Length: 296
Image 1 (cartoon, rainbow, N blue to C red):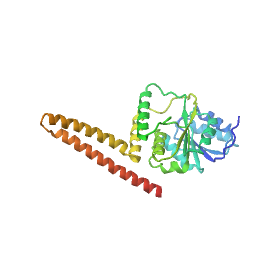
Image 2: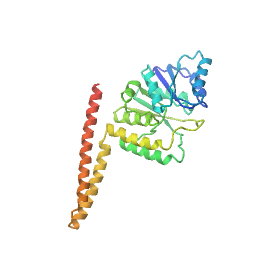
Image 3: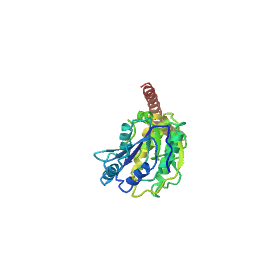
Image 4: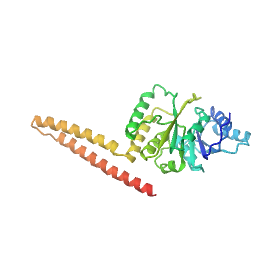
């Protein structure tokens, strides 16, 4: 089964960290199809045999010239590996695919076909289920992200996506080095006014344990808040200001009924005004930054 060549020249970035159980099978699957792309395997300081297996694969498949290996001297993080791949890419489009064997390479063409209409296309996982311990946190993160982005997000952190290189390069300075890279670029694209499309895909069960930890959810939540504050700060400051204002009014009415205006109600109302005007100032700085960025 061979995939027909795409008219789009792209770089396929494969971040790998301790994937000795999967990497050879992934490279075999990529070599089994024929499409016009560069394959960049980014070994993120693996402590197992990942790097050695990739080198052995390249030696035994000398006819495969479109696969390159780049290794970090130590583990820098998933996002850092993607950034390295983006910097090394010499094509108009970059595509990310995980090295754990979950993604079917024959879905690559489905994503590329949608790039006629979008600036980024994401593989929406339709049969993926997070461990029970993570599900409540992921649902909360998804709800927060959708509220702040102002739209539904079918898949917040899918690792299978294709994006225009010039677009992702604009946000390299705010994209994190960890697993929140995909979440942050999703929010940045929505807030930047770019078009994001989703293609339903099925994923396979990964071999080995995931390196994503529960504590990463807290980091992801903070990055969501920081990203939206960077692009649309009023989404955060205005609700906080309104909550403080309503609380202050309740306290003020209670004090008025007692004919005893306390400092507490005045301070809460004052705090609501400070947060509101701080939000307005942040919004102006955000708009000025967008103007400077668009001119640059």
